[in-house]
Length: 198
Ligand SMILES: CC(C)(COP(=O)(O)OP(=O)(O)OC[C@H]1O[C@@H](n2cnc3c(N)ncnc32)[C@H](O)[C@@H]1OP(=O)(O)O)[C@@H](O)C(=O)NCCC(=O)NCCS
Image (tube, rainbow, N blue to C red; front, side):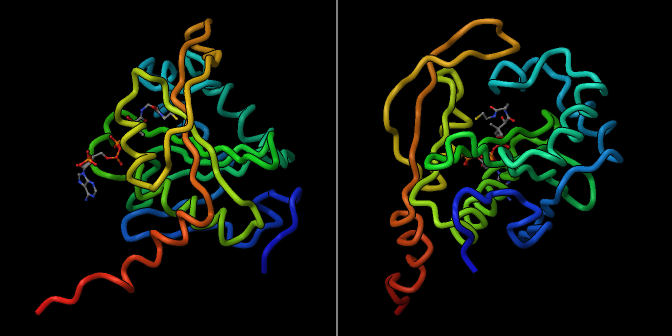
């Protein structure tokens, strides 16, 4: 059943676990803080994400997980492959009419398609569970990997904005993207209308 906005917490919005072919996406708990800190404590990740501090300590992970438990502003999933944490994906609902997709992976897990797989599951979850008309996202102009993910998921470029990045301690240009429900629905249906093999 679709939920009315604003009720976007994971607790209220159906499944706590999303499964894909290779990944399990679930709510992070305090038992995960060591793994989260080990994955996130890398400047290459912090410099591409708006809010991750660097260095990223276990205390940051504890505060993050504790805040999530009472926070309706973010729907966050820990991404696991074969029960091993590999990164995070989530939707930020601070702007209820423009929920924002975000994600990062531990560096050793890059280049296997995990981020795209996790992003697609989270996009499906959001459009299936909430009456929202579009998702937004952004990637630093110096972040072609992230732009690539958004384009593979059907996001369309909508402009450039300046955003502050905690680890940089300054603002930097960010390409903004948008995925409408109608584009998402159309992509999901493509399989039904593909050319038949002879
Ligand atoms: C952005 C980030 C998540 C990208 O991670 P990634 O693993 O490179 O992303 P993808 O899921 O797109 O996988 C990349 C490649 O894996 C390859 N791959 C290998 N095996 C694959 C498989 N089984 N299925 C799909 N792709 C596979 C693909 O070739 C794909 O690249 P391509 O689409 O150009 O062909 C990662 O670099 C990161 O965490 N960066 C720092 C944080 C960040 O930038 N976050 C985003 C800010 S909004």
